[in-house]
Length: 351
Image 1 (cartoon, rainbow, N blue to C red):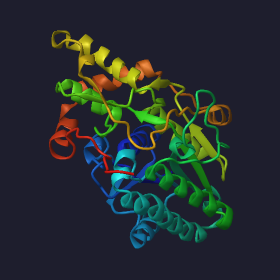
Image 2 (image 1 turned 90 degrees about the vertical axis):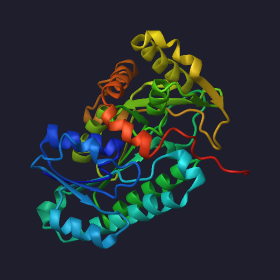
Image 3 (image 1 turned 60 degrees about the vertical axis):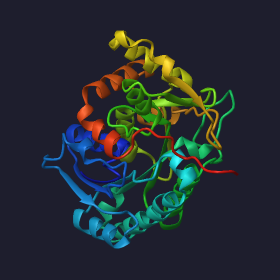
């Protein structure tokens, strides 16, 4: 089995590549442009594996994508390459439009031309998985869950660009017959997470005695999904999901942001008892524009149709995550010193 993964040097992408190479034994081509969040150090465990290849390329480069398809000849494409941080999309939307919309078009078009030329057997077996987010659905009230039929209502430039890319992927299935399936996931966390995101930012700031910035009163709710559970789900969906369908992936672990931060502080208090309560570092900051109140995924379709279940609860997953950052300074220290030191992102003047 030959699988082309885009964005495989990112957080979720690298977890997927490690799973495919080490657990599935697939032949993997990782295509990544290595923007600020792409990190080949996350793939150190597979970089020398005989069933792993890396291609540094931008998915917006249509000619390079066509060449990648022609030379690697994948059976499955798993498309994760994207600009993904909401705060960055607020202050700089252009990169999100280019990568998430134009780049997805470029990849779909290259995939279609490749697929059209396959023999009947290979054509029937081919799959294109478009990986997306629950943020396309907008904000939930106090009750209910996002289902695959929930209308799209994106709030940020990031989620709007992902919604557009979802529509493109489904349109390529309906118009051209390209064998596409789409997944929408809840908030991921775990090892190798770029430190601009909530959980790694809180862990690393706490370790350095820096403020722990919490938007508003911290009451925003997210459904947390351990990244290795997500990697298993993605391969399951890509290999067995029904064509033209969407599958929601969630951990059934709803938590308020402030409760997530307090849990991280409590874990670190147990490790560094002499440093006093880390919760003293929590600082409430002005909320970001368009901050969705609550996300929660109904993963029943994935669980019942394809038999996937999350293996980690939030309690087990957050313990593993904090411990990983404590043990792997070699990975995050260069990022904190040279790429992102913890400053607030997504600030703009006025409305």
